[in-house]
Image (cartoon, rainbow, N blue to C red; front, side, top):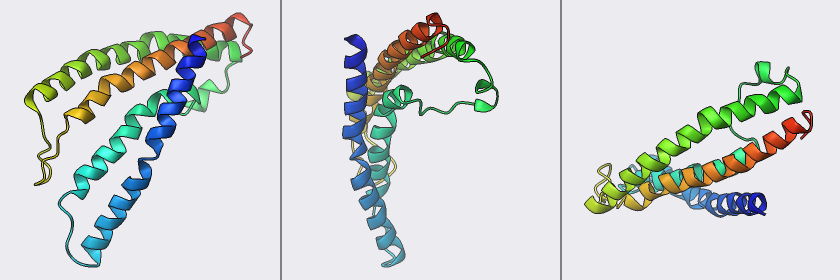
Length: 166
């Protein structure tokens, strides 16, 4: 039940935020046209593109973990037996993924709270859009990644206990 719920949240949230790549593409296209055809770059496109790209990047992390989409050095990993691969994954979840998630949830929440209390805005463009909502996504994204990590850890332990079969 827990695994199915977390998988569904990871997949659904990633699917929804992936639609932000459509306006991101349009913003970049518009800015390129304005810059190179009309010699008049926009003042807002940088911030818009940064925000539109950051959201799927952050929220999609849990889904990427679910589907095995994170970067992995496969040179040696693929040569190991499935049982050893499960053991490596368990070790990495426990001693790398979970501590990093913890630090980014804790520090990201503090970072977001400071940003909200200051009503922080971007200084990159003259429009100065608010960035505190975007910073709020940092701890949220790592909570999602942490939860998906728990699900994947359970799967790895089951695979290890089954003698290496997933």
